[in-house]
Amino acid sequence: MPCVSSSLPLNPDQQSDYYFNQHTYLLPIVSLKVKITNVDKQESNLTQLEIKLTFLEEHVEEQDRVIHQLCKKIEKLGDQLNQSQMALSDFIASQSAPPSEKPPHY
Image (cartoon, rainbow, N blue to C red; front, side, top):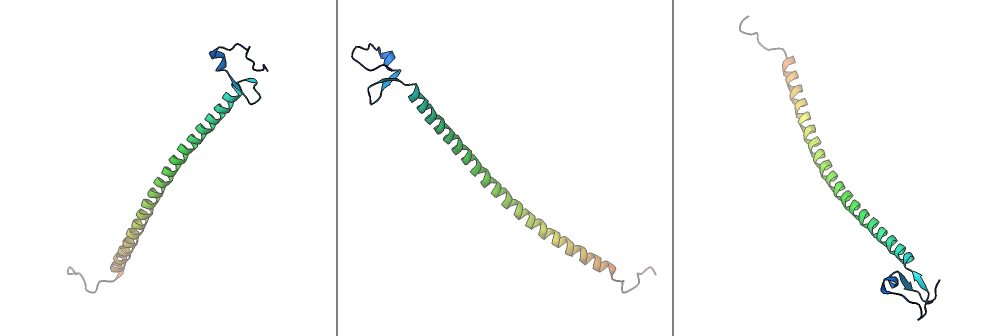
């Protein structure tokens, strides 16, 4: 690695591609860019996970609402079935009883 000296001619464009470490060596920024890129990727991944988590939370809430509505509907249908069964059993009971008097045409 080149050592930094006052005789090293660097134009401003070249300086943007290098940085100084604590030992005063001129090092390429590539390793720094990789670290920044990894941090950016991690932040991007974290943001994507947060978006997915938000979507899933909303989805779970919607499912809870739908399940609650379905439970109410099932209860209502159960009540209607019980009423229908009672009405049917009352009808069958009334039909099985023999008539007490003969019809007028006999």
